[in-house]
Structures are given as C-alpha cells and as structure tokens.
Length: 100
View (cartoon, rainbow, N blue to C red):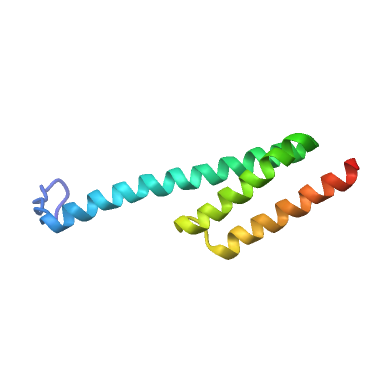
C-alpha cells in the first residue's frame, strides 16, 4: 500500500473484547502481586545492608511469606523463589552470626 492510504479497521468480535477485558484484569492482579513481593525483598535487603538485625528479624518471615505467596499466585517460578529465599537466608544468617 502506498504511504498515507487509510487502513480499514476490522471490527472486533465479542470473544476478542472479552479476552481483552480478562487480560487487563489479570495484568493488574499480576502486577500487584509482583510489586508486593518485590517491595518485601527490597525492604529486607535494605535492613540487611543497614546491618539492622532487629528490623531484619521482623521482615524475614514476611519476606519468605511474600515469596511463597508469589509462587502460589503464579508470579514467580518455584525455583526462582527458592533461589531468592536461599540467598536472603544466607545473608540473614551471616548478619545474625556477625552480630552475636
């Protein structure tokens, strides 16, 4: 087609419109779940970096719970979440032994 030629818009079927609505809803839910676990990990890492054992102890269970929930919701693959949990636990244990 030559440049500037108008393109005729194709009408969308009801099933396509429904799929679009479902995708938008699911995207919003997935984004919220992803944000929740990312913020939990970010807060926990900040506490570890600040060498704040009291805060890290507070956030440890919440962070692990957020990662487990992300697995359940299908936001994270189980192996990926387990890798996060392992590395965060190693850092947390190192902080605990260093402060003891």
